[in-house]
Amino acid sequence: MTAPVGNSARCEVQSCPDIEFGRFDGHILRLDLSLPIGVDAPAVVLYLHGGGWMIGSRKSRAVRAERLARHGFAVASIDYRPSTAAPFPAQIVDVGAAIEWLKGPGQAFGLDSNRLALWGASAGAHLALLAAATPTIPRVQHRLPSPAANVRAAVGFFGCYDLTSRGDDDRPDAGSGIPREILEQEWPPGVPAPPSSRYLRARLLGVDESTLSDRDLATISPFAKAHHIRVPIFLLHGTRDSITSVQQSRRMARELRRLGGTARLSLLEGANHEDAAFDTDATIAKVAAFLREHLGPFCTPPLTSKHVIQQGD
Image (tube, rainbow, N blue to C red; front, side):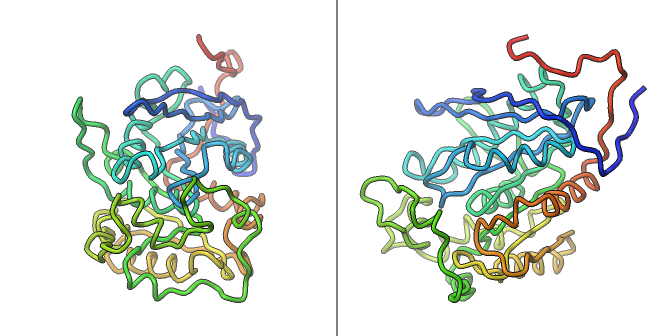
């Protein structure tokens, strides 16, 4: 018989890196899985990294994933195709492929993929909410699992949710400098560094920046698709964000509530974009508490259970 573990419990974590979960047009997609040791059938959190839909990888915030896993969740940090390799909706297709893997081969790791949440930061937060608003993902070979039908909650760190010109009225904090980490990022050849938000959005859609319209941008805006979001949402944003205005999260939460949805908003006072404040024990504990509320508590297995999964078994 399993026994629920208290909220203050901390688990040891087993890392299972570099697992292939899909291939599209010669692009191999991999994920890193962080497993809480001693937890029976853990709920799963699928993490999406940031990087303007163009750069970054599943390894960008490994410590962030591990810290949540210590609260008893299995965290799958995935790669998705960058906009330089494939335009939208490729990124949502990749989320669907990851869910398909979690519900298939991923079961060998003892996961409870019926208790699944999405979590993302920056561009990944945008994709997490957009996926939560996507009821179907058609594909030539077969239909991939619908993110909207398979997730129970979603969490967004400092995301941009209204990509239209209306969202551009939400001005970032001009008094906070752009974090050095972001200024020093390496962008693909030919990309202006740092690229404008409009440039990044055009590349995501696969269109020329000069032809980009609000109609185009609405198709990739979670704000415009908020009526399709049926799961509880938790948005966290710094009040001094110099990249994406905190108003993006405020307006998104307000819109979800207006439509009758469940939306929680936590503002980190003085925090900038990708601030260290998002990786503190206190912030991760807030995320864990929200997920536990909507995915259910985790349990320890009997002492006779095998706690550590051997890759390849």
